[in-house]
Length: 78
Image 1 (cartoon, rainbow, N blue to C red):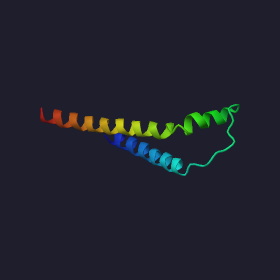
Image 2 (image 1 turned 30 degrees about the vertical axis):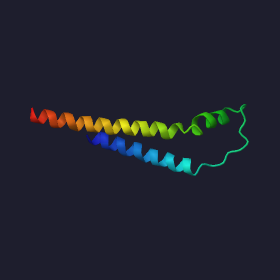
Image 3 (image 1 turned 180 degrees about the vertical axis):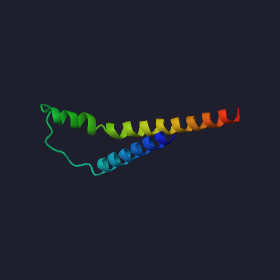
Image 4 (image 1 turned 120 degrees about the vertical axis):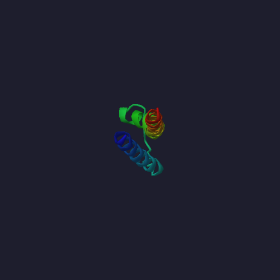
């Protein structure tokens, strides 16, 4: 169980960091379609992929912890 809590803490910390970085969103001008870095920034960062990945992972972590607690309580009483 402690592994799940540590995992959830790390995911939530990264999620908060990405949320902060997206709020502080630097105005990037001069992006071109010829540069690989500019394509990456456009497709990955501007699409807000990191924050969505962290939020989905966080939700699955909470569900997994709840399922773990349910199984622990159920099999303790059986």
